[in-house]
Length: 374
Length: 261
Image (cartoon, rainbow over all chains, first blue to last red; front, top):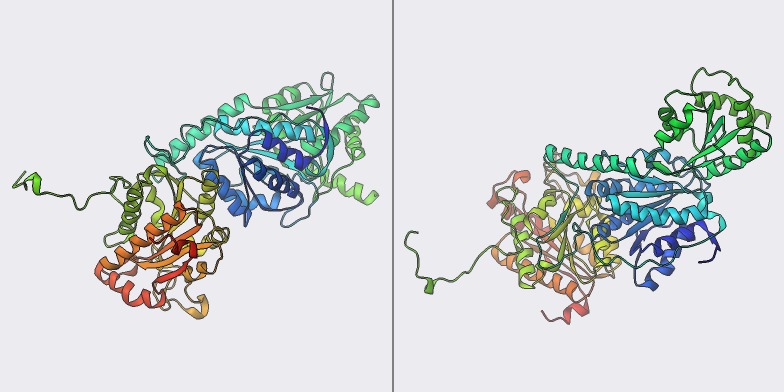
């Protein structure tokens, strides 16, 4: 198929359709609404299920029901709506049924705004709902990657009977780029052995997240954990740019990673040996890969559109092997490449000044100076 | 065997419906959950739906309903059973999908889900158990608790100045255009139990015919949390609950009337 000019939200929706999603349940919220609208236009025409639910709470529980039938199902929302889905996500995790969630993040907390943000990193990557579980979280940095990741998310969700999250932000959802959609996949012909399908001639099936006996719940938790260990083993994904000879490494995901790439290119043009490490799976996090890179680099700069949420994971992964600095913009503000370029230059000017305190504290102080200067 | 009757003269008049498992229920003595679940199971048997039904259990005393029905089951989050049932029914329209929910589940935390399922005319059947109290958590005030009724969270009796009046779900749901069959029955004596079964049968027929949302509200007992004997509890339903929660057919759509069941 040829490339066409596609808006991120529409591209994700169409990618899901072509990946064989059979049921979509959602609720309008900016900046992901085109996704719902695309589904509303396409799904009934294909004889598939589309329901605009009365709330995100209902939408995720409709997903829960449909997921129990073993068919490919999804919902999409943006930050405040995803918060409302946390109950259902925990039940879905506990019941071990696959589903895909797309979170097109916006500024928060609270009602916040509709500008692009990455402030739901902790909520998505480190759980969100109650109980001990890990979803797979994939972060696209372009419309094409959003398409590819959406298709992948369905495969991974099914392979591991887990929740797979496409964690985009408002700019990925709203931007238009040339991208190529996959061909239309055939719908699943065979439903899994655990699916609740109301079929004659077999023993009844039950799907639940309740294990009243703590020993049984522990067995379930161990099963979830073992599956998660296998995911960590096999499904870590990332992209590297200019790392071969890099002395300094910028780490950023999604839109922040993309803006950072522009800054890295500009720094390279000035002769600074800097590269970019862009995690695609935020969960499982590319810990081993980052540690390897940390062992051979001089310093790291984590760039995010939040107050340093992935920063904590980078610091854990790199085990103090090198100085880790941070630069972020908050509340729906997208950093300019020049801001990040300034931070790269500061890092590369070496020796890295003032390593006392936390990288977040140092960034706050620098940010105050930058804002004053502007 | 002592003194068996000759086989030629025996006739099975009462046995466990195939749609019930052999599990011993966790329900308290005198609770009518056992009655209502048996009625649903009998109807599933009689209509030949056991192997094409998918049940959705709720949260509360009915949480373990899935252990007692020998049909495919899922277990919903508190109040969300109608949403979960919607998800299942939309991808499997030819299956028989039903929820079994109590009054705390349906009339309090699950109010939005049930109202919107009705508004959509969702082709599902809801068995709604109204015993005017939260049973599983030990007898707290429900949205259906009667005025003045003592519960652990209304120890001086339900104060309607502070908590409002009980919610009459059948009446409320009957106002939704998407509702096709909404009735209230009681389980306090044999006559009413027979009427309840007939209503449950009709509700499943409505779904079979694709006529939309059907709900049977069943006035039920909770002797343990009402602090009454089983017999007193049955009288409580008759004397205290029915005057407020009047029995009747609140919505029978023309298409349902035309079924002539």
